[in-house]
Length: 529
Image (cartoon, rainbow, N blue to C red; front, side, top):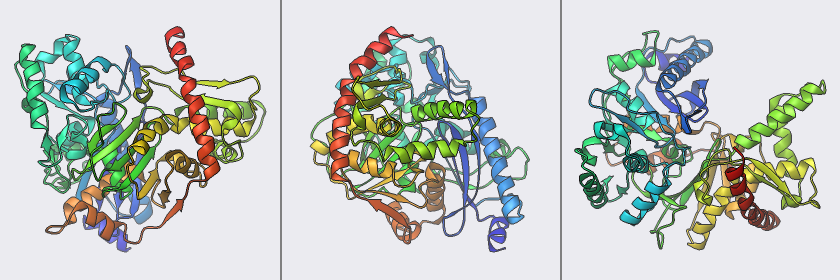
């Protein structure tokens, strides 16, 4: 009854995240814990060689997720969801969404999964002396310029999926600093786009005869807790097609799934980090000092409050596990067995802990798409083994689970050589659902303790709700770091595991084999179409 009254009085705070396979809405209560949720499943399409989502599908998905959330509220508490206190929207990071002056979309939404911007990313990295990953918006923009794409001259507004949804809901063209740091490099002191690098790029635009500048087309940069507008009447109608939701809801700056992952794991302070593992996998480590040099494998982004972060981002993680789980489901169905998908996933992860430490010579290269960390612009998932390898179910399962984080391991080796100190590393996402497996193996991979909170399964949408709560509730002078540590996570429960020495040795041996198998992967990409 207390929660019902709290909701009916309009005190709920909502986080929405458009992930790569699921759009989810999470409503949090007075203690910041989730009290209701709704989701919608969607999937990207490969259209003319481009990984993309249709924006109409984004809206229908958001509306379905919100409708399911409202139904969950009604069923649990007997309450109608008509007003909210705070709202935040996040989405899969970066990508490329250009619009003309009339708001018309100029080309397909080019997502983080695409590896088509190698030339642009390489040239900009040299020009800026700063690593520009292929998925960043500025890399996509420069590649479109290099390609001579017709739409470039008409760009009046460039944003990300999170920024686009936020603007439609609030009328405010802005991004949280964490998401903005994946559009264009950020000056962590001034909390704005790096002015020197922007001047370099504007010089390129002038040479190319392009009539606009970066400041003309990029969204405004906002820090966590800054004023990002309110839900407009038009935005309320877009979000809630039943028409019950009232406008005027305070909105937080929109963030990417990297920033919300940091919030959801209380990993925004120096020497903390998190690993988000699902369809893709990425680690975020908040630095206490700069790296010694530029690494193409390491992205430099920021926390939602602007602190510098070293990020290892990999396009591929659990997709190949999902594919093999479907194969096993097909086998069980053909054999007349009643086995659920949940049982199959549990069997894979539990069996992985019974396999040999190095998988007995079985190697899984899990690349459904390209993987920049290891220099591949396309993927061909494959299992490789020597004739004498012990190909049993436990070794096979372990190869799937280790293969999902092997590219991440390659990138984390760089931070290890840089002597980057990590006091705490939090894991979250679907990869960690089975206790005692992924967490232990990740600890061995990164050679650091790994914790998983009870809230790890809530992930990004809950993290976005926390950022919205900070926007609504922050007191004078209260930082995001203190709000999360002292208010949200003060009594959080977590389980921490420490790396096993034999698992570390096995993971290193497996990773070396994984790297050797990349030549075969390159040949498969070249020859198998």
